[in-house]
Image: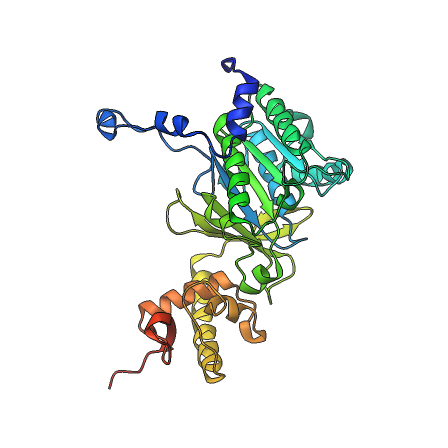
Length: 376
């Protein structure tokens, strides 16, 4: 492997740390579009195609205890071993992880299970390194602690000395390294720009794990604090345990993917012997039967819930029909993803329709789902 060119570590660390570069630097980055006419753009780089882009920050959100750290450990093992992650191909290369919520012994125990599930010998994982800081302040961005900037530069310099450099960097979790008001949009954006600077400097993917607030859990968007957390990253994933489903089931959703192809934005997983595996795929006949069941239950619940006076919508939010239906006792263990597919089929077959919600002023117009009247 060709050695990476020598770089000025201090200068690189400063570039990645700067949240607001001076105007002169911005002026220097202007590009004349015409100068690109005869140049082919470089291909977009991925660690996991359509899910985790390189040179960008991916936010992975989920409630405590759902398994986010384990999921990311599996990602690190996959890239370090050149294997697959949840059945998806990965870009082979070194991986590093900062686990602020677990000690080294716990990571070791999980690593044994993950390696066994991936059929990988731990002795071959020399490309994966992790750090479990002691139970002290490990903030990398702080409005109170001046030492946070020194910790950040120290981390940058360590990562940039690695040869070869990592292709994925996991930071677990945002609450441990971001010591500021999570609802302060400006500070959140500065912090995420720091992480993006790290991704650009190392040509790597940065995966930041975060926990939702109570409001985020209620709204099911699994966010916390300012909307800048979701808006300032180029990829956002959620990891959740579907309600009313089997206890070992999880759902990984791509809720934002600026560079991703549309569709296939959900993967159903099952915890098995210390690792997550893709839930068994159904054959064509079973898939048709499952889809017919989902359509039947969707329409039955739609009728019942509208009779109860509930407003159901087709877009994510407090009234999102698939999420609300999946939480009902009558859901027959169908997931929100299956109800979403059923909703789209019912819309396509004109069994339900999207209409303006009555009784709302024009300034507060909103759409809702309604059972379509049969043709006379």
